[in-house]
Length: 140
Image (cartoon, rainbow, N blue to C red; front, side):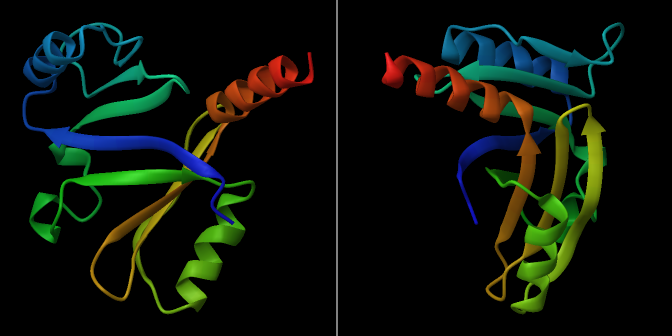
């Protein structure tokens, strides 16, 4: 069911300041920012050999609020978010984030496992694009 790590999202009260700090720490600049003008609510970096995504989201948008425990979630790539989310709920997880369309090719959902951890699942076009490009290199 889980294909590979897709995206990890951290939260911050000041996304611009966090983005600057991570840019310095990582030696990279965010490739994605929303909104495009004004103070950012979300920025995203692509890192490493597989171009994994590290997002920083305004803490106000954390599902259930920051007081709900934990302020990061790792999203695992899946083929069908709705089916994966439902399966996790059927196995005893509790809802954390309902299925949410984030933009074309990007859909997320998250649960709290029976032990309190947040587990995210994501349909992620970027993950599929990287996989396809690596597969074509391997076939050559």
